Image (cartoon, rainbow, N blue to C red):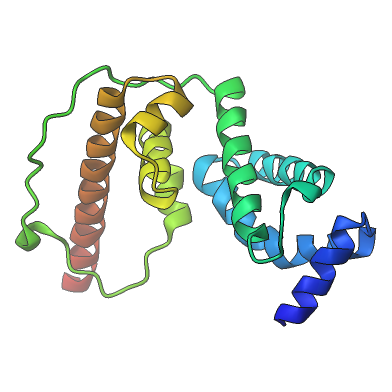
Length: 185
């Protein structure tokens, strides 16, 4: 598989459309999930995905080797998703400073016996929380980097991440309460 991917990547760098189509088929599902985790609308996420692949294939010479292609492509998808949100969405961030010391008691954590569907969770999460959460958790950005990307203060980034964590905790508690109520019936 690795040599096949290397061959496909090499041909895609030569602007071979069939090789580019193969790369699209291999990576589009995962990259759509990435775009969808930032953007609540599937059609918009697909637009971001197509734009990201267009950029990737236009600038594929910038990607040095096939091993780094998925990471390089993911970065393009994330940046395009953030750009899309900046252009098309009005995002409100609460300008409150974060204070350290969020209580994290393991006994307060809900017990889950089923799979978690991140797509459903991210569709419900407020967009300001979701952006900061995705950048901090999945993209491993520091608060100052997030602040620079989103044009907010580092304190707002910290606050939004804290609020996202609390929102998730409340979400899981609500799901757990619903699950418990259904099991009592």
